[in-house]
Image 1: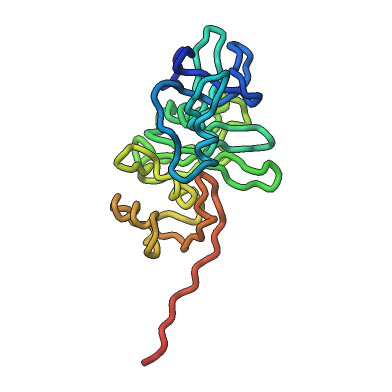
Image 2: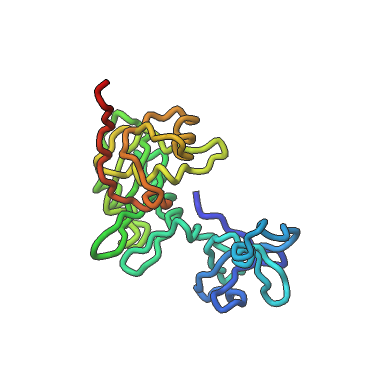
Length: 239
């Protein structure tokens, strides 16, 4: 499947960093903006309201946070959400672009990508794959070479991890919070998280069995792998 594209016009535009609209064919990356009926704003959150609902050239637009470009023919090409973009060596990698290429590999049923902290590049791309046939071995070098044939080399994953299932919520959205743990090389099964935990609710609702360390709130940032310290065992005094 290719990234969605549609024509810019009165109800769809791409906003540049300068505050105007991106010129077709310029190659500039901006934020997708949509017109038409929209909410007044976020309740008691002026900052988020100002970020999401912007006045551009005298008109109010909704800017949900998706990056896009405008082709020469005036079509808008969506690149992906900035919140899950991976910054590697100063280059932005939109994970949706890499995931689409990964899904074209004959052995891959589903794929997601996360950023792994790297001392030299800041982050590198890690691919988390669900296979067409879970019983068949996967050649990770073949997967990486497959991506490099279609995309720039810095966008190709440096690490490939196979999981039994790429987890979806009932809304078909990915459970981004558990991806960092699924991509850890030390994790092969999934864990029971301490309550109260939103992640534990997700896991319980999806009937997943987890086996990971207790995360701190800062360790659950979307699509970035963090190394977590082991959780010490709970001890009880002798009665």
